[in-house]
Length: 157
Image: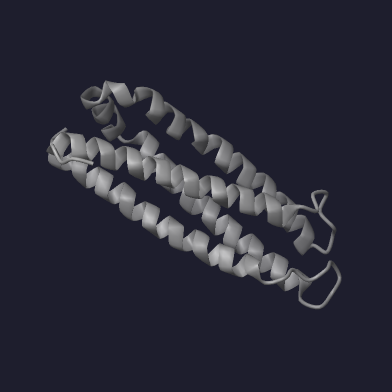
């Protein structure tokens, strides 16, 4: 694989990160409004709207993570930068856990949309914690890819 293909891949990943950040920002904006209590007017539509947003985020994250994991570019990056192997393994290893937590949150929100109090009354906190982990994860990836790109081009940090 050529350096230009690797750079295009990194540019594509960074572009996807920007898109995901906008999806997350919309979700955070939605969550800023108070949640109606179960059985109150608007509680069902709020929960359904939240479910849709979370499912959309799940689908987008799933596709993005697969793009990162299933292309040969990661192998090329590791060949060019073996010193980054541990960090790349850590970053990629976070993907399944983030998706698993998101699925558990979606399940709780779907129960709420049916008018049932979810077993976890801390849904908003769990979502916020997940979104903070996402921000941290994406920032870590961005810094890693940009640092490796700077090394390849000889630019200084």
